[in-house]
Image 1 (cartoon, rainbow over the protein chains, first blue to last red):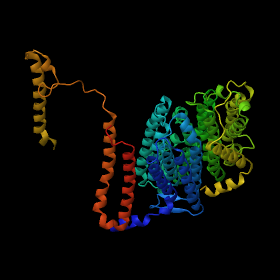
Image 2 (cartoon, rainbow over the protein chains, first blue to last red):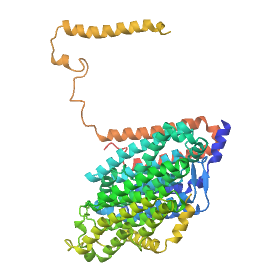
Image 3 (tube, rainbow over the protein chains, first blue to last red):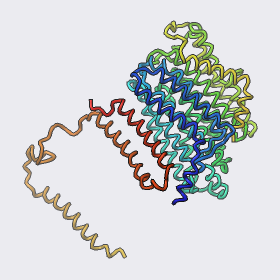
Length: 486
Length: 118
């Protein structure tokens, strides 16, 4: 007993959780500032949150090339976790920059919004650094609970309520699946540690045929695949993405999705390494299914947020191609892709934030008719983001897809790469249709309500620079991603 | 081996037969003279005021939720108190941090006016 207590105390390594610790402390401090501030004044809260994210970013970067394990091996802050933490921090920063004016326009200047984003980010960082299924689950819960509130944030809007409730119910079920999977895996292997499961598989290769083990692993995967919105667990995505506040939609599609991919990668690549051949054939099917469903349903969407939701499903499919490849290029391409996707998708959503009217009923294909003439700058940046989402050079979307498919080809999955490229060709249609509306239709509106200023422009500029820079000079980031891979 | 439980089975059988038998018998041979008072859910006590399926004020839920929240978190103090000597200064600091987090939540609830009944 005495020894156990001593051991537990010695296992504490605050360095290993320092980034999320800093973020949580800031989150609580900002919450305190917000309740003592005047009701409805949120601008200073937003900037304080940005400051918190900058500090957290620096603290996170200290951990680069300086892996820290702690808490009896349930947390590992390695390059992989650092990379994904940075993606989440960047996504949270871009979200907060586009939020302040947006919240005021929609009539909800409520300051809890910002601490909730910070807590979501902290949860995402735990997920990325967790090496114990319980730590990953804890991170997932912190992330999800904050996101449920944020998705239903506009409490007098039916659509937002629907988004919050749908996300809550389905999310609660999926975490139930995940936890059930953890329980079954624990029953078979006697451990919840990711490397413990790997060691068990190494020692007992016949476990792969054990029904309990297969059931546990499958349930675990269901939980993760729900969070990354992969088919056939994607049904919630369009409704939630459409109903949630637009900056939150952007955030959900980048930060939490990256964190879920991080946890999925760590569990499959490290923990279930012994099942590589089975898992790759499973992911092969899921990747093709996800890409195809996302792209084909997106073709018929009139609502831009809904269209981007389906596009985000298809991008999850592309990312899973890297998981199928299971080699160095494929896996580091996932890291690369998630950062690039953060920039291009959040940039596109930031433009939508700018051109939306109160209630956002004009965010449809017809609503952007003639935008390219009335607001040329917005037209150009939105085109850049859409080109990147299509995967055309010289944008980062092209390089990201190139690396992903290169990984698949190197691993011998030629057909998967072919299907991926064909899917990209399908996606051209619905992205280009937005541009056709912007440039080849007569403007129905004068877009006089769109004023291109305020913090949201920072987030558009950062995203655009990121997309173009990573498209032309991808090597620096790719070599960093290779260092961060397993 | 199970036959030592046979008396229990017999008693259970008698109990069921008696219960079901008295309900059936009273229905068959009883006299029925219903009145409003007899049909009320409770024959004695307070007269009924409205139905039970009413809308409750949401304030009750908030208070109940806050109670559960702080109640459960306060329960964590007990195992810590039992282990206090063994955990030493580390446990003290940890619990201090925990209490501070609780306090932040409490201040938030208080300033938001969730504890006021207006």
